[in-house]
Length: 317
Image 1 (tube, rainbow, N blue to C red):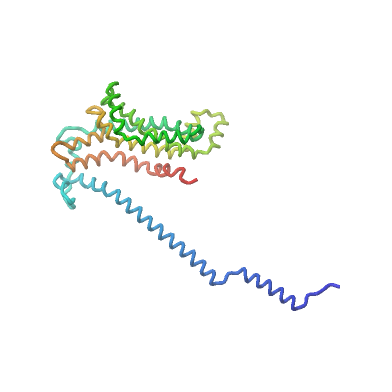
Image 2 (cartoon, rainbow, N blue to C red):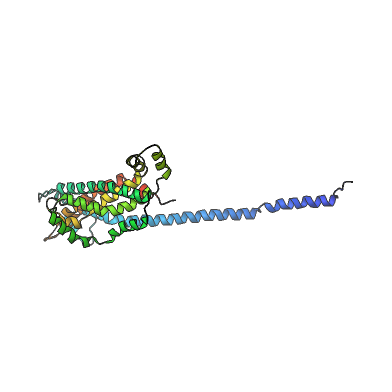
């Protein structure tokens, strides 16, 4: 004979199930509290982002103010440029740029600019030609203690440049390369190669190994893999490295000032010609510095997307 539940038992079980469902529901007050907490978190996140955005703008303005002052001073006369504090609202003139292009002295800036362009472009190409295979060997085909090798490359940049100035001068004098643009090409290549290998290692380490293995299975040799696989994939990093090496070479003045003269003088060396025994011609110096900075600024603006993409490559795993 089957047992039947009494009405009281059925009511108790139904009440228990209803109570369980009720426990699984959140009270309206709990839902409101959680939604308010999420909204408060979003508001706090927006405030933090706004704060750091303001800090970034202030830092950017602080770095931009000297450049803006240089450009503005380049359009002033020498009398207005030398006032302290700076004179705002002064009349603008192009005399500084006329002096830069040799209106009164007859000294043309074009030979130094061509020397700087030659040394910077050729040395940058040589750096890439040497740095990409070296970084490939350390990143894709790592050797034993590759971190020590990378540290050795970077440690060469820790030596003060002035410490190597006298030995380089004596060697250049001995082999007859003083005041020779190819000496500057060799120097800039050796100076930028360590940092280029360091940068390219981090870029090439992000190249998927599966792509290289697939190319090798298809019969591609190492030069073909380098040219058709690695270079296109790591193009943003290569562009960033090339731009930084170009800027370092273009702005270098210490070795160029000592090792070059009339024939192989670069643009920064030409800039020092406006500092004479008569004093510092501030408007002319600012005009010359502005004109000399234009190629670097143009290259930076033209490649800014590649530069940001290349410098951020490998930052997120």
